[in-house]
Amino acid sequence: MKFQTVRVFAAVAVLTLGTATWAATPAAAVPAYCTANSSGNTVTAYCYTSASGTKFRAVAKCRYQTPSGSWDYNNWYGTWRIQGDPYSSSATCGTGWSLYQADAQVS
Image 1 (cartoon, helix red, strand yellow):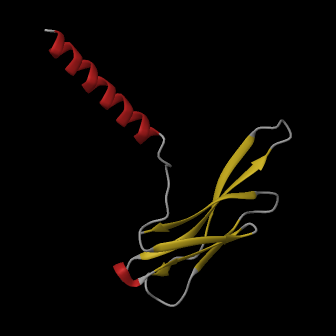
Image 2: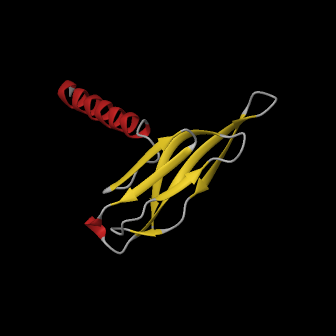
């Protein structure tokens, strides 16, 4: 009976640890075969030919501190481009906003 109880507790511990690790994973990541770089408040994204024909665009994830001290969040988007073409996509935060994450979006 003791052995069974230990196995149940061990299984619960593993499941709990796995859930905590999963919950700590960032919500957004640059898609595979793409890059997103920033300079100031501008994001430049490019997606390579690995999935040719797919559309992509740059995403500037920005924030603005209100007079009360809280943060507002908004995304600015670049022009849609065809993956594998020689063109990149750029997006810039609006006036008064600051970039907090560079990203790319595929369609």
